Length: 338
Length: 288
Image 1 (tube, one colour):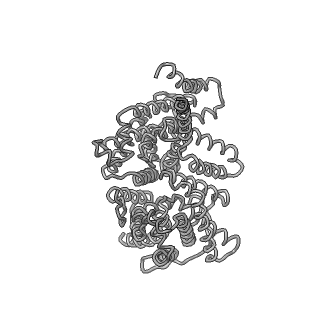
Image 2: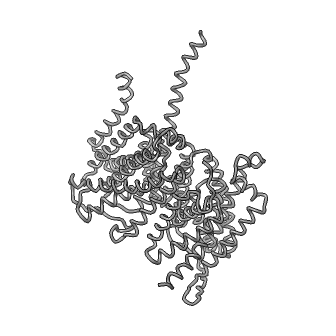
Image 3: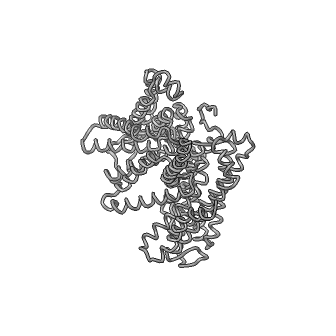
């Protein structure tokens, strides 16, 4: 690839990034900044989920990791005044530990496909139930509010939303960057082979358990940090929004509707779903309680039926097909003339 | 303490009967259409609302109301198969799962729009029987007997009728069934209708026990799934037995600790069994 085509390819991306970076300087309404920050945070979590999802390692229990990360960090901060940056690390390690135990057991005993999805679904619910059970410490389903210390980088709390905007952007960029690194490494090839056919992959000497555990641990750790990011931004956690079945299914929803096999798929899916949700809520939410959610649900089901590869996946497949046709066309003409 | 545990065991067995009732329809759909029907609990919720509506607004008898709700849910099952599941039969399992999760959002909020978020129940007082220190709620006992009758009826339907034979054949081997001249599309429709009717039956037996609210279904769906998979997908007897296991385990551990811990113990048992015997207690391992 030469320099000009590289620039040409990256040009729209650079413009987009520049636009995102200078947007806050144009003093937009705070609501817009809030929504974009929200999209960044959930895109980060969804991208991290699709590290596993793209290799057919479908986890429906990422709510467990979100909940573990968020609650470890908030409990340490509220009770012992430990900085959420350290809490983020410890929360991530806690989530990775759970992922290690469950993941090793699953991969060792050959629990794959639907069974893996169902086991992880149960895990998400277990974490939600345990948070509820220790309601003296965690506040149960009433949730827990973050102690306020004003603006302090050490305690990862800012009074203005704009800081979170940039911080979550950095997180999202990191997740996308890591995706690229994984995509270009040996790991991607090994996991791709495992995802296609595990027994065949094992027969050519790929260490299945090791590779699968590696990606699971990375995904769990980063998801937990996403949980901490969410907690610091919202300054409130509760088991319903961070673990349990609802959120565990909402993450794959976003990934699938964007196209989980592509780098930008999760981000686009999240942007689409979050803005759709907000739009419907603002347009219809005040008039009839609940009707907005009905529309939202109908749209989701319709999108799943008509765009099975996700928005980005469908569009990029379409473009590739067009490109292939337009490349083949001149050759055919030449052959005809000759 | 022994008395407490003994009565918890008895209640657990009765709860197992209630859960077993819940599991039949799910098991049938799981076995035949091979789809994880996440919105099954929401079907039961809708059925309970229909019974509630018919009994309060139209002053109907509970038996007639239950019958009508069974018919409506059967039709809803057919609609579900035609509109949502048929286009998704060939797509990845995750897409099917998420489409049904989308249906949960639709059904729950529809109920919220139509009936509001209040808890609704019917006024039906069934006595509590007691033998010595053991107290038995008649409504649970009725549901328990109902579960056994439904299991027998379902067994007759699947084993003694031609349609039942077609359903079982489709569950076992789709390709050979098509060679025998059975159209799987029809079998799927009939299965979904049966599943809907079964959820109507569940709703009628649940009506005297629980009060209904829009999020009623989600409380049961996960537990119902665990039971289905624990017993072996599509295996009715396995589902029946594991319903009792889960019922007894949750009610004894709820007495000893708290309900949340009891539920998580059930889930952890599920995870452990999944690791050792992914095909379920009575399932047959498919060759991979």
